[in-house]
Length: 164
Image (cartoon, rainbow, N blue to C red; front, side, top):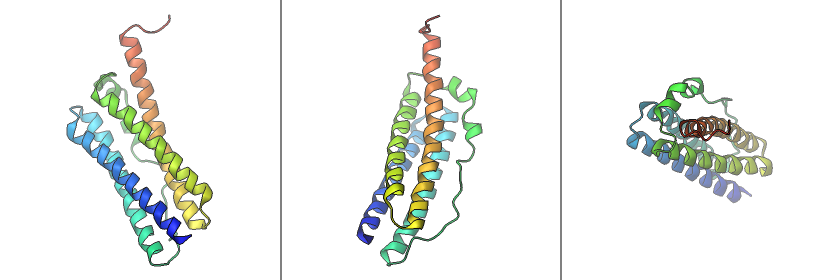
């Protein structure tokens, strides 16, 4: 069973690295300052997840139980991110909107992965870790879904797609 836990943690670390790489690439390529700030925060949070997962991996690899860690409940700075300015700054059909949609799909996959592991893990601290990661990624997902919805509505409004 320990090998399964190690394999799951390795997959989780890889998942977080991929998310971080995606978010950092947006920071490097976007010309919209508000989008850069949003993705800087997301990349920093993925880095925090990587650090926690690496620590847990090292413990598990040494035969130790998962460490009980103090886990924060919510993503920080979301109120600053979800402002009307960011929606106004992004073209609903442009690059930034596309990466927000891609990031949303990425976060959905992370939620599914962590949620499944939270449900199937046998050790209490491991369950808690994956439950925390599930909730954190749900916060990312909800924030990105709201942003995606607002961008979609902006496109509809700009192109008179509304039925009234």
